[in-house]
Structures are given as structure tokens and as C-alpha cells.
Length: 133
Image 1 (tube, rainbow, N blue to C red):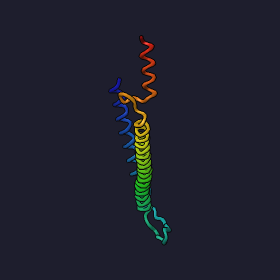
Image 2 (image 1 turned 60 degrees about the horizontal axis):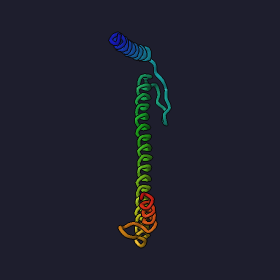
Image 3 (image 1 turned 180 degrees about the vertical axis):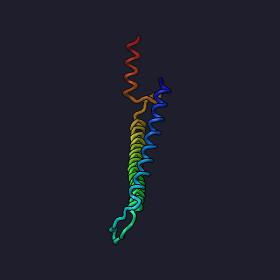
Image 4 (image 1 turned 30 degrees about the vertical axis):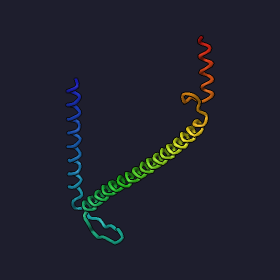
């Protein structure tokens, strides 16, 4: 069953490609004698329609590539700004944590009792030890 579906997809794509090529050939044959006058910042008299269509298609493709490149650059700039913001936030958090640790060690350093325990913690340990007896 899977092979039949895959074969159908391949032949469908092949038929579409052949129809497209036939359409392009028919369009070229039907428009080979047609002439047109175009103004593009200057007047171009009696140029072939096929050349006009080719140049239009070429500029459309170039514009598409340029726009994709420009949007990619904008996306990269946003990602870079987000990364820089995250790094700055992480740095600020690290500095705050260091300051907090320093303040805690300074506060806890003066209130240390026996065995490095604070006086309040030592009292609760003594209470727990007495309750277990």
C-alpha cells in the first residue's frame, strides 16, 4: 500500500512538472512576436514581451532573496539582543548572590557557637536532644 502511494506522488509530481514546462513553452511561442513599450525611468520602445517577463522574474527572485536576507538579519539581531540581555541578567544575579553570601557569612560569623552552629540553632538542637531521652 505504501509503495502505491509513493508511486502516485512521484507520477503526480512528474505530470505537474511536464504541464508547467508545456505551459512555459506555449507562453513563449504565443508571445514571441509581441512587442511592448515600457517606461522604467526612461522610455523603452518596442521590446519583446519575453525579455520583459524574464527581467521581471529575475528582479522578483532577487527581491525575494534580498528580503529573506534582511529578515534573517533582523531575526539574528533580535536573538543577539535577547542573548545579551540574558547574559547581563545572569551577571547581575551572580553579583547579587555573591553579595548575599558575603552578608550571610558576615552575619553568621559573629553569632557562631560551638561546632560552627549559631546560637539559635544550638538551642533547638539541645531541645531536640532532651526530648529524645
